[in-house]
Image 1 (cartoon, rainbow, N blue to C red):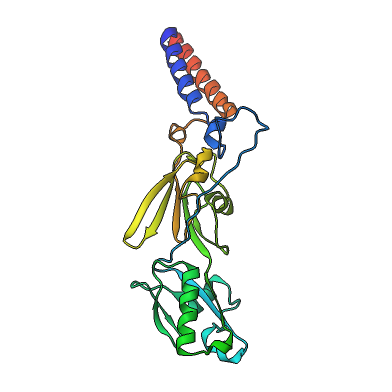
Image 2 (cartoon, rainbow, N blue to C red):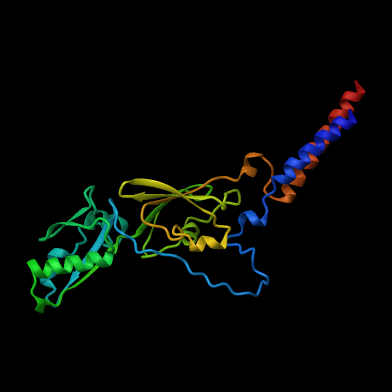
Length: 265
């Protein structure tokens, strides 16, 4: 009986020890090839210009010497508070419809699907000069995405967030969501990204320094970041060695007590 209990105890110890979460599971951007902690790393992240997709909201502002002349093109407050807030941009921004068009004052429908914001700026300015302004008006057009909205799910703070910047990498997005929990799988973070023909699921290993070279290192509007739990979490063991030791002692106590109870019968 002692041998059987000892065998069960050893098996439980093996399972619990293997379930302990290590530094390799939680440290971001590890470079295993470095020979010295003092070595410097030059990170060259890939970032392609973002091309506007369906359901994006654009902020378009037109300026000219005659301020009254451009009022029709620029959004007003309309009682929604801050004109740069997410709520205000929903009502006053230019939403890209299912056909890739926006409805712009005077100019009517403009197809912006697949264009960069710089290309849309040039397009709007060209049409304004052709249909409404003269060259002497000295107009200036700025086009920006009305915030970079993304969603996080899984072993990370769940919710939809907006960052008002042109470029945001996935680490910044995760930090803005409160970081991945210790039990989250950083080796296989899923990114669900929107394309004109539908959605695709991509994977990125955030424990590897090479993640910075991935085309998915920088997030895009409407991305969904999904973090799965580590397999160790499913085993029900502790997250640290101390927690596992406590569990092992408890299991050992139960096994010893069971042995003496059976022996006394």
